[in-house]
Length: 286
Image 1 (cartoon, rainbow, N blue to C red):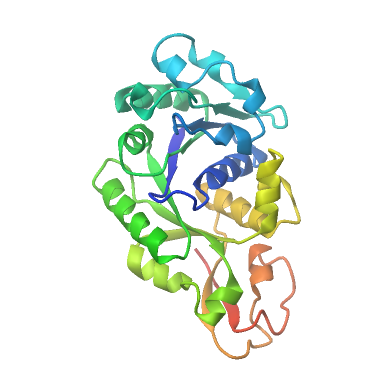
Image 2: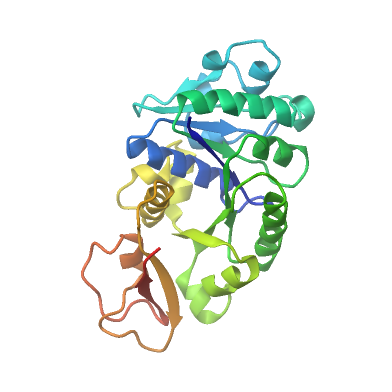
């Protein structure tokens, strides 16, 4: 039996769908059989991010309402051996399916796939209830902004009151220069508010936008800082010990400190003295 992980946020626009696509793709690149499930009925985007929008025949609602079999609605990503997607309906609303129906569908997928990654819609209404119904675990995505962190805190409370296991946190679109200038929350500030385990930090990377526009997950680009961060998150999901970084603000980095670029490359580079401005890092094992 596989494992279902819901990717949620509360606030829209923090990179939840991009995170779902890249974590799922990274797991597939690591040899796992993966199904991405879009539960954002009426506002689906996962198909566009994955470049599969022109291959949709059936969708989640068709399966729930018995108009097709589950395997008929699954779209195989031909770029990978074991990556599939179940799209959401575009012309219906989130009340078109019930949490019980989604739970049954996810249960069937778990019999076939090692990982089912569920892309949750924004908000805490019906779409959220649908998405978490079949989930075993959760990843909460936030950006280091007050509004996003507040909404993430609300989502965490709802997850913890449900059947979902202890949620993990991804802090997305971190900009070291803005943290340095005090214009963006530090990672420690976010963790202090949300008080859940951190599973990944994703740097702000313009290649993410470029990749989404051409329907190619960022994680496929070996030169992207964000791609390396997503691959590290996937490895942590699999249980690998991959170092995270604890930020340290100081005027000068010591010669033995690690720069942000080195962190996202997974410590496969020699230390570079100086780092980036005040924003330096020292490793701490997860």
